[in-house]
Length: 460
Image (cartoon, rainbow, N blue to C red; front, side, top):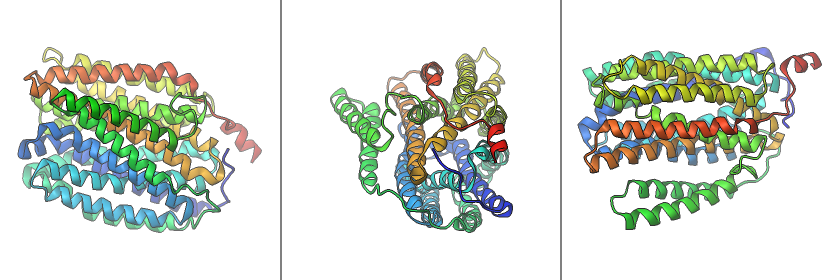
C-alpha cells in the first residue's frame, strides 16, 4: 500500500493540480477535436478501411509512451519525460496536418499517441507522489472535470475551422495550444523533483514493443480480406499480445484476481466497451442518420459532460460505498447508454435519443473509471507507483485500441460486402453491450484496502 507522500504546502499542491489539469485539457481538446472531424478527413482522403486505424494507431503509439514515461518517472524528475512527450505529440499533429493520404494520417496519429502516452502516466505518478490517498478521489474528480470546457468548445471550434479553412487546420491549430499549456505543466511537475530509489524495469520497453506488434498483428488480421492471411495474423498476434501483457501487469491481471489486478484488468474492459462505440458515433450520425459534423460533435460533448458528473459522484460516494459497488453502478449506466445507442440506429427513432445514450454512457464511464485508478494507486508499493500507473494505463489504452480496431474491422467488412453502415453500427453497439455486461458481472472483484475518508481524516 502506498504511504502518504511527503508533506507539501497548500500552494505547491494547488500549483501541481493546475499543472495536471493543463495536461488533461490538452489531451481532451485533441481527442474531442479529432473525433469530431474524422468524417471530413475520410471524405477528403478516402481510405474508409483505415478509419478505425486512425484511432487504434494513436492508442498503439500511446502504449510505448506509457511504458517509457512510467520508467522515466520512477527514475528521474517526471518533467523530463513529459517534455519529450510534448515534442513528439506536436510533431505528430504536424504530420497529420500535412498528410497527403489516410495512411500518413495514421502515422501522425501514432506519433501523437506516443507523446500523449507519456501524459497520463506522468499525471498518475504526480497524483500518487503529490497527494495523500484520502485526497486522490477528489483529485481524479478534478481531472475528469477538466474535460468539460474542451468538450463544449473543441467540437464547435473544430467543426467551424473545418468548414472555414479545412480539417488540416484542426491538427495544426492545436500545436501552439499544446506548447503553451505544456510549458505551464512542466513548471508545476518539475517541482516534484526526483523520486526515491526505483526498481529497475528496463525490460519493459522490449515487452511493450512485443505487445504493440501483437496488437497490430491481431488488428491487421481482423481487417484482412483473405482468410489465409487473417487467421495466422490473428493467432500469432493474440499469442504475442497475451504473453507480453501478462509480463507487463501484476500477477493475476488476466484472470481478474481480486484487488489491484482486477482493477487493472477491468479498466481495459471498461474502455473497450465505451470507446468501441464512441469512436464511431460521429461516423454513424453523419453516414446513417444524415447529421452534420457539428451535431455529432455535440453528441460526443454530452458524454464528456456526464463523464465529469459521474466522476464527481464517485468522489462523494467513495467514503460511503465500496469501490466494487461504485464500479457496478457505472457499468449499469454504461449498459443502458449502449442499449439506447443500439435502438437509435434506425431512422424510425428520433435522432435526439443519441444524446440520451451518450449521456448515460458518459456518466457510466465517469462513475466507474476513477475508482479503478484509486484502487490501483492505493495498493501500489511506494517504489512502484510508476509501474502500477503504467500497468493501469496499458490496460486502459489496449482496451481502446482493440475496441476501436475491431469496430473498424466491422465497418471495413461491411463496406467490402456492400452491407449497410447501419448494420455495422448495430454490430458494434451489440459487441460493446456484451463487453459492458462482462464488466458488470465481474465488478465485485474490485476491492481496496484504503480506509474510508472520514477515518483517514480523523487519523490525521
